[in-house]
Image 1: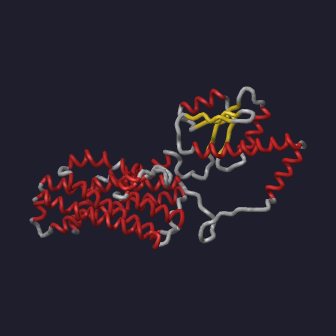
Image 2: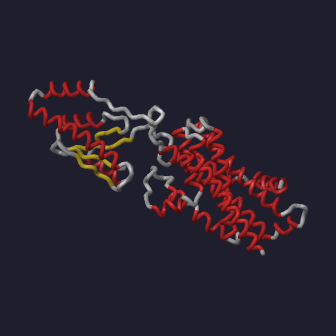
Image 3: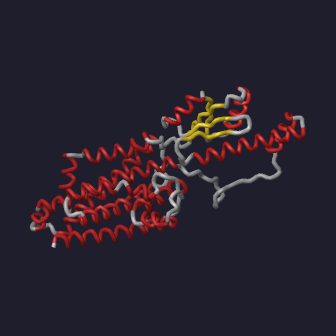
Length: 369
């Protein structure tokens, strides 16, 4: 086992370009695509007014809309706002009327519903106040009374978690960062495991087996090296996230390390299954990079939890380690999940590792026979 492990390390030492590229992409892509680590920053929304709405009326609506930390509403010229939407610089824009609004959007994206709910709430509250002031008169005093009543409300609602702590909002930025890191390590592991098929095709495997090294040690050397390499890649990227972007990956290091090791082991097993089905390295290099990018989509890595509701797609996602690892890691990062909470994901990762590894080695040996 040790000679095979050292041989793989010497190959990596002579040409480390693959692991460097994949580690760099794991860090750069989440930052470049969507500012994954700025989830606390407010979303900017362009606003333009109807020609019949006065400047004073526009400022009043802007003041009402900007009473939130989630969004920043900025007044723009109508043509400029529409151009930004059509060019993809903004997801949407809002046209203001005296007593109504209109959302201008090029596509139906995930933020549209939340923004529309907020804007609708602001307009409904303001229009109700206007109705009361028109009916009762004395608009300024009525608004002041309502504002005082809201500050000293007779009933207050508070939401908290089961243990009494404040509810944490779901951090989509962390999900994108962690998900892309786990996605990139699939390629690293896959191409390293493909070395087994390469050695078998070239005849090197048979020559080594004739030496004192047995077949079991050959497999163990390749698989252990790929597993350790995958773990080192993920841990290195996580540490970069910790020191560069203050991602809270250091609060439960033992839990995270356990999940990372199990995920890497299950991905080694899955790559082994691919290698045994695809007989030559050329077939692997053609099929594996085409299939792997579909797994994050099926597993819902790029979407908020609960977006995928199709039962068949959810069942397919259960067959891949990525969905289980992401669920467990996000539970640790966001909710400080206990070991008991993680047992289901850990058991599934162990099951997939055993199943795929057993089938993969069996098929590879049968193919050789």
